[in-house]
Length: 213
Image 1 (spheres, rainbow, N blue to C red):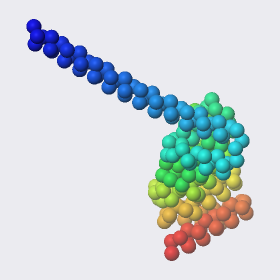
Image 2 (cartoon, rainbow, N blue to C red):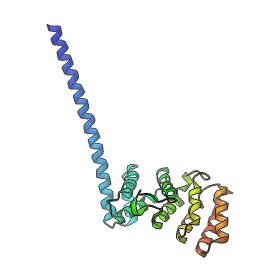
Image 3 (cartoon, rainbow, N blue to C red):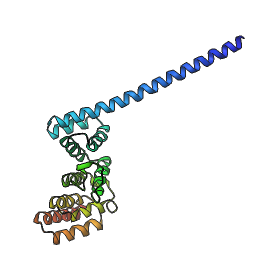
Image 4 (cartoon, rainbow, N blue to C red):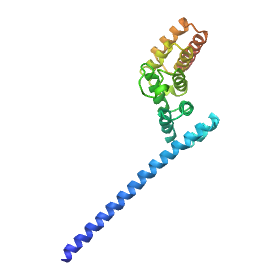
């Protein structure tokens, strides 16, 4: 009888311990989710308040690595205002690291074919978004593979918007050793209708030549 009672007490303690552990894990997960939500809300408030871009960037970078992911989520949110989404992308483009480079390059690749993703701010529909992504790669593009990843950027040299073509040329200036980028820039320097784009292609080629030495 006593043995049975002992087993019952043991099982009860085990169940209590498991329940306590479950509650602790649930509390931690809930706290993490709340912290992530608070971070996104805080960033959205800054971007919507008209804070100067430089000041907002300093505040956002101070929040750590999760801030970049929050910016990506905010840009992708179709229920956020256009202003906030574009400012989120601008802030993301000011980061010089692999996370920013990978996402901005994803936007550039997406410009080849419009989908429902991102709504009106899809890079195939918005030259402004595409330009900002390319401009960001001018800073962080060195994290990308120069031959494999620069094909999508080089394709933007054929875009109908000369400002997109100029942004593409500028981003290729930091692409590293890439025959693909060199050929695309040489062709654009010789044939583009816009003096602005031809000059950007020339500058990019000179920068690449200097960097290769």
